[in-house]
Length: 285
Image 1 (cartoon, one colour):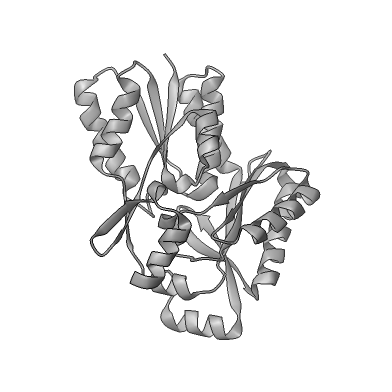
Image 2: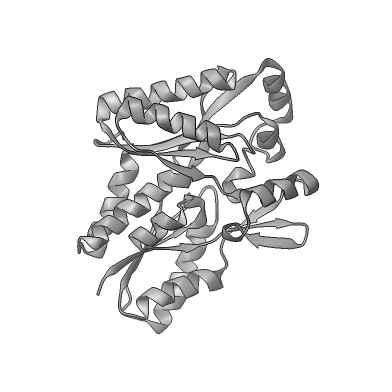
């Protein structure tokens, strides 16, 4: 009997990471008119081309069927399962997972399935899943594996910067007037995820200065709490992400993972967005 980890596609983990840590993924989807894609089945290049042509799509959570199938694949073998999902304030995935679990338990009455609300997304979610997977590989029980993920979330932060405010306005994350004025004045917000919701961490004049301010925040956290692991997120700006990765490696003596942000999160910030997800050695909260 082992403990397995299930998370969702907004964790933005590469296929190599998923394979290495034996993490199962259930995918969210995006829909253009009547054309639906699981975000794991459409490239960023194709997605943003479609979004430019057809406008902002609708995102949707995994189906109950997909969640049930993923859960049953684990418990039917006698293994236990920890599910860690995108913030319940951002998606109905967490809520629907509870319905799916109840359905599975009707047929597998002795199955053990825990569901954790990460209250975040992207690699802040991904690092929690990896932490849980490492604990599972060490032979820890389900409660200990869950605690490992929870402890990681207390140590982590996700900061990201849009290239402009157009997609935030279109996606309803910022008012039209604010977006217009912000673009004219070249005011760029540094965004974060706080208590499950996207919030403005700081407002900076120009993207270059916003990136510098983001690095300063990482440095302050590293000084206070010690640095763990780090991921550089980007949307269609790999060269910029690579440059930032090299800078962070020199500053903090870590080897950052470079990760694309997928369509479900990316539709709100658009191409050119860049960010840093990381966790520290000591609790930040």
